[in-house]
Length: 157
Image 1 (tube, rainbow, N blue to C red):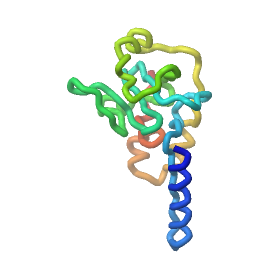
Image 2 (spheres, one colour):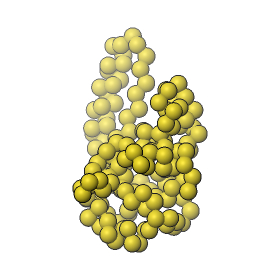
Image 3 (cartoon, rainbow, N blue to C red):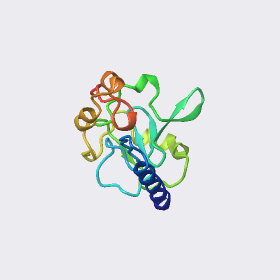
Image 4 (cartoon, one colour):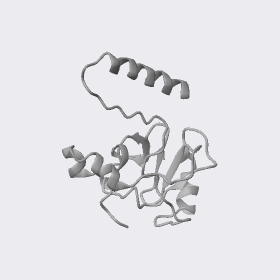
């Protein structure tokens, strides 16, 4: 994974040196989102009990149940687009390594029920920093999706 990051970074540097236009590129392959909890570097998934879905850190995708099957998507489903990812509790799945955390959904749903709050969490970044760095984008102003467009920071629980 580090080799891939280095290759991509090298390619981008090469391309930018040959280009006259100024381009800002943010490569976040496998890095936790700004709304993720501090202190966990080698985890792959979060479980979000309030909305009963998972977040795949490496692929930056939400995994949720829809129409009888588990779906992976860059954004939360429409009913949860206003969910506050910064203030919502994230269960860090430290003991799971694989590709299908929903295999244990029944256990997670009971153990980490809607409204579950474990130990207090501090997020890696904060919503205000993200909003101000993206204030020129109309869609960010309008819908204000947290880091990488993963949900929205408007609704409080």
